Length: 163
View 1 (cartoon, rainbow, N blue to C red):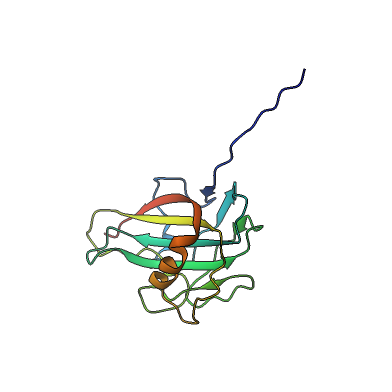
View 2: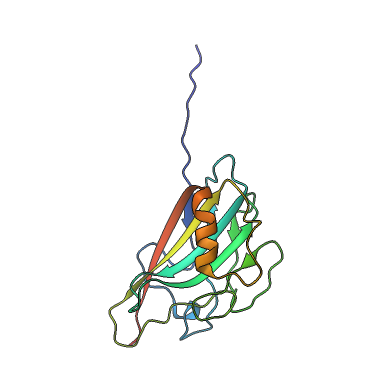
């Protein structure tokens, strides 16, 4: 007699630099080196053609602030190393223009004295590649282009405050 076990895998996003709900280390903020943390993921769903990793701050005073959108990430990739900053060039994926007006990553930088802001790092598995993304596209444009193609997403939230 044989038994078949089906184990559902879900898309998961982790960072070796901070755990869910913890403070984001200063190195990855505007008070430090202002470079991206490292990320790892597992459980990329079948049919994924591209991955998208974004970072936003829904606690920003003027509404959601977009810090990063890295897209055209190959679905067979399982990590991004730390260290992407403004205008970093990485073979194998593209980076959108953030709400600071610069391409690439710009870390947490909430107003001094605010309560800690929650920074949402979200990895989305897309069923279609974002081939229509124009050079110099903003994070918002990339997120909107990707929205109808999301198969599944995973989120990792960290916090940061400035005295």
